[in-house]
Image (tube, rainbow, N blue to C red):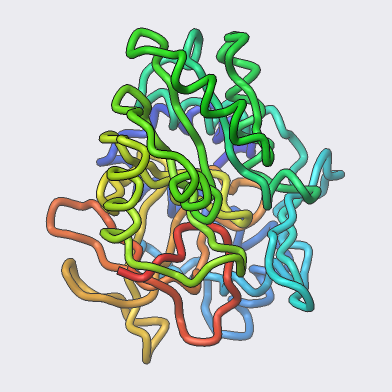
Length: 327
């Protein structure tokens, strides 16, 4: 690997067959140039030169983003994303030297799934995120709104009447996408009965302590019955990652930039085969400036077709805003 910039430029051109090779190259680079990850590998007694396959790579526990600057190389942050967490909890921090790269990559992943942003109506109901600083989700959706170049696009906080009026006065040709945090979507569904069959709903997860968690099937049933939506996608992302996945009915296809592996809940260094439930490990090649190999606190499984599902959280894990519904 020559340098980070050249790796970034090829990120969206990586084929599925070439993923492993790119991941190993990035691992070798970060094992040498990321002090936190390098020390973690040293404490484990892992010699990076001996790592030849993805299954040999140790994943950095996500908690390191709470207490250490996880950085590869020497650079000054342009911005820092901060997780929401709850009162009294230490939030994660993910520093970035180049916000434009995050935006371009997020746009690529969205357009790969849904087509060009230009002209679409992008509306967002993200009250918990808008009311704080440092949200990567708000930064991404704000960029989408600007790139849509549509005067109907925008954020909504508590002004549900204005949001409903806008949604009811659009039609299929407008290509409307509503990004919404789960508790706010349920609030909307309790107060309105709509027919939004032309709207693509993207639920970003998260009750933020406002409601009790419910299973996804129950959530989707309420949203379909009350809001009349048919096309419901979940967005899987988090502060510590720069890639996102979009999936219907809780199944997320793996992108060219991200790979999900499942670890044994009793042995974090043992990986499980398809169909088995365990802890989610993520390789995110977009995390070139931080660490691309993250051990999350989410539970899930990889299916035989390569898609993955998020099934809940480890006991006592901090609640985070990325699809925490148990199913």
